[in-house]
Amino acid sequence: MAGLAARPRRRYEDEEEDNERIHQREADRPTQTALGAFRSSVSPGKPKIVVLGATGKVGRLVVKQLLEMKSIEMTVVAFVRDYDKAVHVLYDDLVLAKNKGGPKLQIVKGDLVPPEELPGFVENTEEEQAWLEKAESAAKFYDGKMNDYDNREFLPDVNEALEDAIKDCTTVISCVGSVRPTNLWTDILARPLWRLLRPDVSKWCQDRRHPYYVHYASTRKALGYAEREQLRREAAATALAEAEDLDPDEIHIPKIRFIRVSDLCVGQKPWHFVPLVTNIIQSVVFRYQEMAEQILDQSPHVETVVLRPGDLVDEERDVNTTSLQVCHTGELPSPARVGREDVAALAVSAAMFQTRNETLVDSGPFHYTLACRWVGQSMDPFPSQGRKADGLADANKALQRTLKTIYKAEKRSEARKEALKRKNGSSYSIKSDLIIRMTATLQRQRKRLRPHGLCVAVPVYFFLCLFLKTLAYPLLQIVPGGKTWVLPALNRLNELTIMMFSYVIGRLMMAMPLITRRKQYILF
Image (cartoon, rainbow, N blue to C red):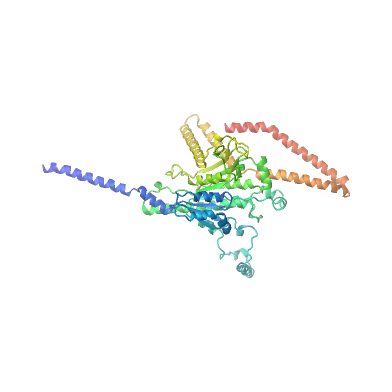
């Protein structure tokens, strides 16, 4: 009887030991509270949004709308070049930020294009001049090069303010922009064709307003600091996970989001009338905006959203007759007028929306390019464009509807990929591989920089030649030998040029049907 009575007791003790082991394993598993504390130790707990170009017409509206979000406790960093101008422009926002609760405004003085990074910069200070004299003397004495001694380690980092502003941030909103007229001598005549065809101007252009510095170089610099900050957080998360004996796969570090306000004409062909004329007048501005979009689209560490508005206006939108349209393809037909207030609202909404499937660590960052414009049949004092039903009255709702369209397209794409994988062993494997290769080829062609410089060079140099010809012919009438020798040679050269040009155009017209058929074959 004693033995029979002992068996149930041992079984009960074994069950207790098993329950203790189960409870111990559940205790070792990180809970949601533990994961939240873990994330807060390696990533910012509160939103920190950096606004580049905060004193511009769109940037100041972005700052204002962010500070009006009283229900969210966050920090808004206005990165400006002129502190006094920022205080004057953002005075109402500063007063608004002094209220208790809600967002806090911080103004940081810095320069996205510091003079030290421009070619030919010379700082005329006594300390700099003394250091240059010592370096030159040492180079002569030791028979060395000036660069071996001119390290200038004592000079401060000109980008330290931008790096500190982006540190611990969650979102960067770039609203920078400028209008720089084309300089006929430095941009075109100083190095014929070379300066128009080559995108890099950092070796000769000293104008900080050039689109290369304003759009491309500033975006590249800010994106580089954002990617470095994201990698720092991920490295800190990995080190902390190893120290706390946690599973890194169960921890998601939110990615920094970079939002940039671009232009709708970037999506158009560079030989169309409006982009062509704008590039000729404004230093090939759309080439550098496209370069900025490309580096954002190729970022492997940061989420990016590019907003492409049409013609910006300051008028308010009549919600009764006009709505806001947002397209996920990045292209919309002209005319495409839109208010700066709506563009700022879209930028704020793009900074605040939550991504889906945040638990998927292996999924890379998204890159969205969104076009926006007003739509409506009655848009006084502007002509009508589109239909009111094509958009929505609220910018946040318009963005949410566009994001739903993107999510559905991504799901369909994933379903097609899975279907192709299942057919790999069937007779459709060759066709599926061909489709995949064609798709990859089209994507590479889409990312290739468009020939903005060539499209500008052809009409510019054509009209310059006509202008020089108009001036040269009257002068050659006076010069001895001009009528008998020079003018006939120029006429023959002119006829030969016209014949060659006509031949090239004719061959292109003959080959156009073949090119069209090839494009249809590739697409379908």
